[in-house]
Amino acid sequence: MKRHTDSMRPRIGPRDLFDECLASLLARPGRALLTVLGTVVGVAARRAVGLSDAVIGQASVSEALGASEGFEPGRRLEISGGWSHAFSPKLGSVVQLNYQRRQSDRGPQAEPENSGSAIVSLSPGATFGVGHSSTVYTFVQVPIYEHVTGTQLVPHYALSVGWTRDFRS
Image 1 (cartoon, rainbow, N blue to C red):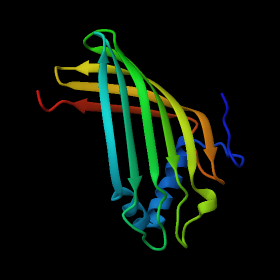
Image 2: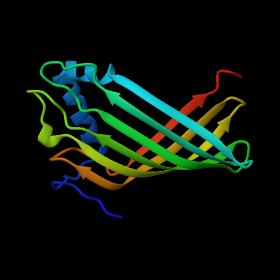
Image 3: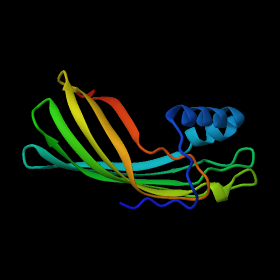
Image 4: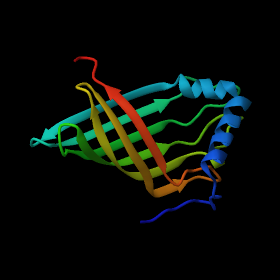
């Protein structure tokens, strides 16, 4: 599997990544607000295949509503597709292929030479039914291809744990 970066990526730990993100948010609160209040348009679908399998997919586009302090974050496109399998009514597995493309930031305060990326990740995971309407899930997202512009902090993997609830039942 090929991993490509335009420049050498320094090895960083989770604490370093957290500190860098926090410092960035505190240094430019307007930038953080733009990112949070951006436009998000997306679709998701799940199609059963037999009794215990399903094909899953989703796509979304995120874009800032405008510039703040001479900075506008780049548009983000995310596309995911995968397969889920139920081993039992309470235990399941999922594997997804994720594509994320982020355009370079814009504006006089932006650093377009150090922003923008295209990343393809493989994300295996598991789901656990809790009660009759909740699910706990976990997955690890491992990049299998990266094209990062300039010098950026990029994690070697991401671990996610979450909870969903069906409020219709």
